[in-house]
Image (cartoon, rainbow, N blue to C red; front, side):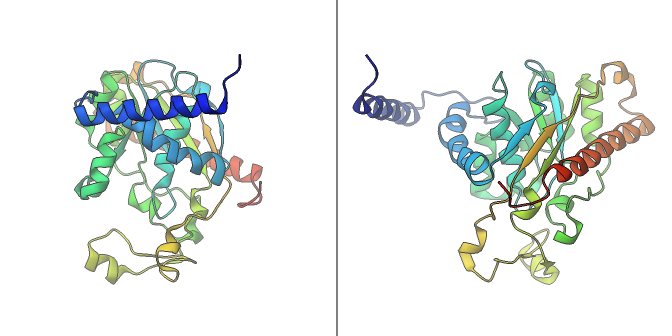
Length: 285
């Protein structure tokens, strides 16, 4: 006999009450970094699912390149004024990967100095972007996500959209080399259009101790409404992994690190160009 509408709602209510009891009693697990899988799946991913699936109409390809088990280092381009791309990538990977892998994001120090944001980042699996934490996660078999452009990528002007910024010193490459972890480049198209950054008011950014203060077509003109992201069409493509197991003795060789970082950067840049050709209309279906 098929479920009746009332049965479905009864199960949802019972599940919700059970979830609340576990939270209030402390009967749930977190790891050494503060990651809370139950809270992530029950609260944060459903909210992000509305964004990536319904608002951004995200298409994901190349998921077979993300390991079904064991460690992987996912390296992506960063953009969008507000770093929604990292969160969207994390939720889409978990939902659509056959093994439902969690993406353990590495974030800037600023993220973990902000009271509420820091707690959310920890609960959803994030940690500070430093080599010791990255290597611990990789050695424990996690899929780790890093965005080497950092604030240079997120805070660039719309006129520089989809032009990768400098990758820094290649710390992510060293972490992959020391642990023999494959590097999976990922290209994300769509993030540049959600808050097109027309200008950066640098004096105000310095006053507020922010990396930039954006001016977009809707912010600050529309106040809080200016924080609603524009409904751009997103394409995410995971590229074939770059093996590193044969280079573990070269983790401290600057030339090897630079060349590998440059290979990852070029792979992402060329994939972005390819995805942009597939998506001629930023706000199309």
